[in-house]
Image (tube, rainbow, N blue to C red; front, top):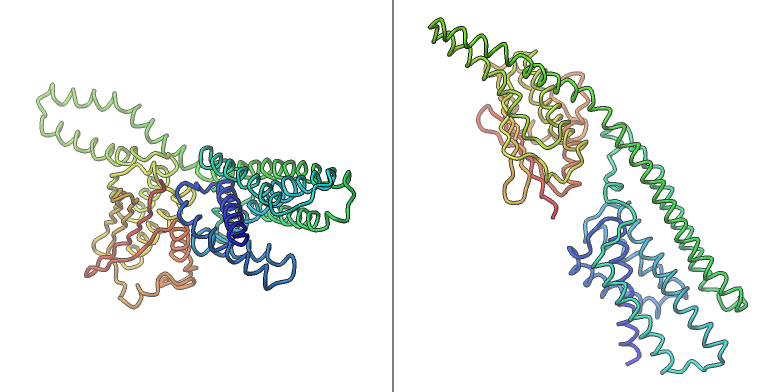
Amino acid sequence: MHWSIDFISFEVISYTSLALGLSLVGVSPLKVYRKIIIVSVVTAAIYMLSEELMPMGFAFFTMYVWMLACIVFYMRLSLVHGVTATLLGMTYHLTFIMLLQYNMFDLILTSSNIEQDIVIQLIVLLFVLMNNILVIIFVFQKEPVLFQRTFFNIQDVQDDQSVPLYYPQLLFSILIVIVLDIFLYYTYLEKSLFTTSFRIFVTLWGIFMCVLILFFLRKALNHKMEQTQLFMDKQYQQDIQSFFSVIRSQRHDFNFHLNSIYGLIQNGKYSEGNAYIEEIVKNTQQINELLPLSHPATSALLNTLRELGQSKGIALHFYIYDDLKEMPCSIYDTNKILGNLIQNAIDEVETGNMEERDIQVEIAKEKDQVVIRVKNPTLLTDEEIAQMFQSGYSTKQKHEGVGLAGVEKIISRYRGIVFPELDKHTITMNVRIPILE
């Protein structure tokens, strides 16, 4: 009976810690509640088994090491993302369960000279469980977020040749939380050595410092994230201005075109007027087909790549069936995927001296997935295509060969896939990325 009560207690505590930790790093606990239940049940069993077999103190850390492994391998979060979620769950466990609830109850019972028999222990246990159930309800209702999920979409250093500006700040925050958790744990472990007044002081001071440190870490990371976003926006500013200048130029020239068409019609030159209109439509269509995209930086990138292709005698045709508003990738990652795929297609057509010099780019949405297809003529063999996603591989001279490998890593980070299709002398690069609910 006592064993079963302890198991339920550990299961509820681990469930609360895991749900809160995931919510604080931007993962909705409602969407993974089944996995949280499974992990928390196994975690409680591992904790009780570890408590029987291991020295005092090891069971607690064993429980959270197991929880971290489940977050990374079962819930498929990145290592940094999982470590932060686990540490925040541990911080809640140490601060609000062990120090605030169990420790304060122990102080009250000790000062009142009340013997801690099985009934008193059961009352304390039920009190803690009820508090955790209230926390679970709050977490599922409000889904509090301390660190946005975008903090953990860290670019691969080898592929990007740089790291986000907030990356060192994120690692420093993790180190601070580790030190904080160690302090809280050993404070609780050695509580019997302290006087009553000092235990009260340490408990209140620990909770205050915990909240204060997490608050300032969040402010610092938000500041660094804003700096990173500003840095990335500046990279697209020139292309966006160029794109909008083309649009303004078209609008400015519209009246002149109308006057020219009107003059041709008045003079009865209908065939010349028809040819003139066809030329205008052809020029404006190139810009109009990019306007449906939700972010101007993506439109600007595609327009720049089309101008690059035109300068090399290569025609890019865009078929936009989705505005990418639900694209789970950041705008930086979205442009990197599109940019690398289209640039590789341009390079392939240019270096291969193809007779057919057309590239087709399709953006669509199919079955809750964003789909990107880039189709171009190619001379690649099946063996070369099988190796193209290896880092460092390239069929071109003086080429780093990290583009497609980097693209694959970005796409896999969003649980998507990229794969080639070869049809005679035409290759299609297919990208599928699931849309986040």
